Image 1 (cartoon, helix red, strand yellow):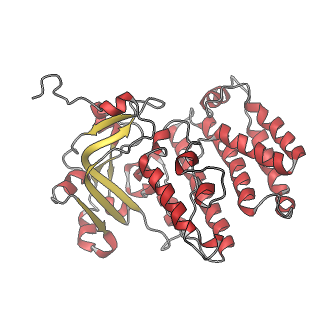
Image 2 (tube, one colour; image 1 turned 180 degrees about the vertical axis):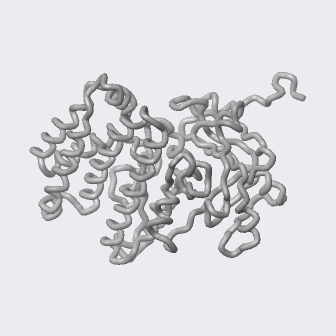
Length: 368
């Protein structure tokens, strides 16, 4: 998609640029909102006359793309250094005896001693790539600076993903922290890369879930030892970042019952009493923004611990209190909050019958 918005890909349409999003939850990116955004970014960049450095891009931070990233590293090296590609293929073959499910089968086997750990191989590959980076960068016309950065970041993803899938079976906190720290490291590497190219500090918007964007120190996650993107960025770049959260009271959401399940259009239950969402609902406005830096009285009121709802790609309304609510001090968790009282589910580009039908009302079949 980044290549598409810079007019550097073979994709003829924005929809084609999104076809790489294949694994669960594909609808999180392959939806009508991102499709429109990709088209808007392309038009925006096409209208810019200040050169490539002034154009906007679209980048990923997460580490789930283990097998896709392996493929991208090898493909890039095949174009510029076939011998290095052969070495990479041999190292990454360590994963071949496990199913290509983006790592869970590998992680389970490696964590419990039922299979080989590929840690040494992925570190060796990253070091090999970094050792030859300057040589590749000097090959005029063979590997652009962006492509070199892209290849190295994919090698970093493989390294982080390998460790993530091994640790995810040993404890939630260690795998959560590894993932968020990886995303922040990627963010900082991207900021450095873009700033060097532009000759001035890059401006970046990070689109992530509230549970990642918010500062963990203001939530019950801190008691479990968890960190978040928002916390780490605040600590490393005080004064140069703003954390913005979203809340909603009711509406619909596209989500699955379980990880790997089909996308469904689910009704969001009205927020629980004593929650921040209910408090925002009582304001009586359809949507509004709270900026705590300019509203000290509001900030003081919202320092009190309240429930906050977190709905991600999985939504289980039957166990909502246990599955989706946690305690937080909202005005310390975020710098600002946008409340949309009734939200509408994102529309997947591939609609299933289950999504089209949506959930039946709770009173079905009696309609009372």
